[in-house]
Image 1 (spheres, rainbow, N blue to C red):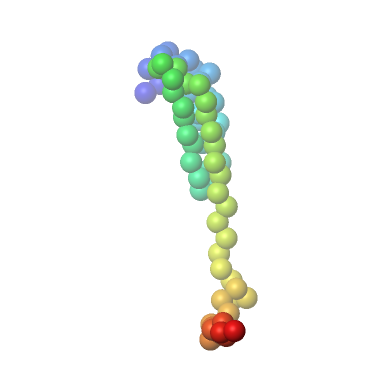
Image 2: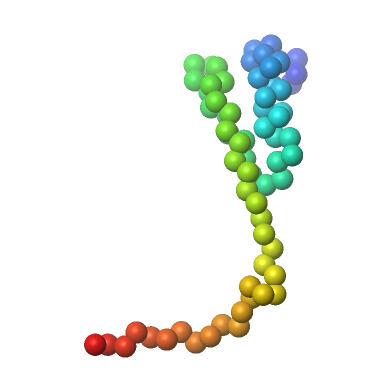
Length: 67
C-alpha cells in the first residue's frame, strides 16, 4: 500500500496513521472530494464497565395515578 502513497502524499498517510495511533474504541473518517483527501476526523469513544454499584435491584414501577 505504501508504494501507492505517492497519490496522496506520504504526509497524508502519516496523518491517517497518527489518527489511528492509540485509538482503542472509535473511528477514523476520511473525507474525499475530487480524488483528494480534504478532511480526517477521529472519533474516540470511552467504554466504562458497569460495576456492582450501578446494578441496582429493579424496583417495581409506580403507575401514574389518574386525576
